[in-house]
Amino acid sequence: MWGGRFAEGPSAIMREINASIPFDKALWRQDIAASKAHVAMLAAQGIVSADDARAISEGLDRVAAEYEVNGVPENLDLEDIHMATESRLAALIGPAAGRLHTARSRNDQVATDFRLWVREACDQIDAGLEDLQRALVGRAEEHAGSVMPGFTHLQAAQPVTLGHHLLAYYEMLRRDRSRFADARTRMDECPLGSAALAGTGFPIDRDATAQALGFARPTANSLDAVSDRDFAIDYLQAAAQCALHLSRLAEELILWASQPFGFVRLPDALSTGSSIMPQKKNPDAAELVRGHAGRIVGCLTSLMVTMKGLPLAYSKDMQDDKPPVFEAHGLIALSIAAMTGMVTDATFRTDRMRAAAELGYATATDLADRLVRHADVPFREAHHITGAAVKLAESRGVALDALSLAELQAVDPRIDAAVHEALSVDASVAARASYGGTAPLRVREQVAAARKALGME
Ligand code: ARG
Image (cartoon, rainbow, N blue to C red; front, side):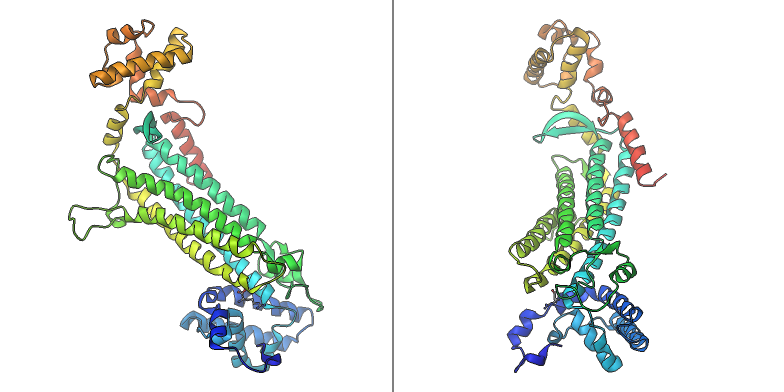
C-alpha cells in the first residue's frame, strides 16, 4: 500500500512490530461503516463516479459478509484492519478499490473507527450498569428495614439498614453512568475528513459523513482530530472510577461472606470450591472483580503515559491506544455482569447482621442524643456521660440496653426513665430520618425515587 518509494520491503521484525491487525481487527465493523459513509460522500460530491462508488460500497458489504463468517484474516503484511479491508476489496472488485482512499488517511480513519467503537462501549456499559442498579434497588427494597452494623474504621459505629447500604452503591453507579454519558457526549464529533493531519484539497462534505455515522458534528481542527485520544482516556477514566466502586462492593461481599462476619451467602454459581479443603466455598468472582479493578487502572495509566509526550500530530505510538481500551472494556463489562449476579442472588443473613448490630455499643450515639434532647445536656457532655455508660456495660460484658435504669442513672441522673426505647437498634435506625439518612422510611423513599429514575414503575 505504500511501497512506491522503497527499494526493499520491511524485515520480519519490522512487520511484527508494526502490525496492529491482531488486535485492531476488532474495529472491522466500524471500519466498514466509515468507509461506506466516506465513499457515499465522495460520490455525492462528484469526487468519484457513481459506478465506482457503487462497486466499492457493494464490495465492502461482501468483505463484511466474509468477516462475519470467517473472521478477519491476520495477515501481518497488511499491518492493520484498514489495509486488510482495502486489500480484500481490491481483490474482489479490482482497481476501482483504489479510489476509496481519496481524501482520506489512515490517521482520520483510525480516529473515526476507534471513536465509533468507544462510543458503543459507553452504551454497553451504561446498559450493564443500569441492570446492576436495578438489582441493587430490588434488594434495597426488600431490606429497607433490615438492621446491620454500620462501620467506620471497620469498627461498629451506628446501626444502619441494609437497604441504605445497598443504595449507597446505587448512587455511586448513578455517577458512574453520568461519567460515561459525559464522555460519550464529548467524543461525539467525527474526525473523518481530517485526512493525514492538515485536511484535504478535495471538496469533501464533512457534515454528510458525520451525520451518516451518527455523530453530532465533524471535529473542528484536523490536527486535534487525528492526534488526540482523550476520548479513549475519558472512557478509561470512567471505567477506572466505576471499577473502584465495583471493587469496594466486591470487597464488602468477600468480607461479609467470611465466617466471622457471616452476613451473606454468595450464590454457588458465582463461587468456587477448593481442590483440597472440601468445606470451602470461595468468593472468587468477587475477588476477581476486586482484582480486575487494578488492571483497569493499569489500562488507564498505560494510555495516559503513551500520550503524554507526543508532539502533534499522529505518531505510531498511538497505535498502542487500542489494547488497553479493549482490555479494560472486557474486564469492566464482565465485572458488572458478575456483580449483578451476586447482588441478585446473594442470601443476606439478616439475623446475623442484626445480632452484630446489637453488639459493639452501636447505639451509644442514641443515648448521647437523648440526653441532649430530653435533658438539654450539651452534646460534648452527653458524649462523656455515654462513654462512662459504655465503659460500665463493657466491664459487665453486657449490651448498653442490658443496663438497668438504676445503673444508668447512677452514671448520670438526667438519663430518663424511657431511655431503653432509644437504645434498641430499630429505634436507632428509625430515628435517623434526616434527608439521606438510614431510617427505613427514608430508604423506602429513596427506593421509590430510584425506581422512578430507572423506569421500573
Ligand atoms: N494502525 C494504525 C493505528 O492504529 C493506523 C494509522 C496508521 N497511520 C500511519 N500514519 N501509519 O494507529
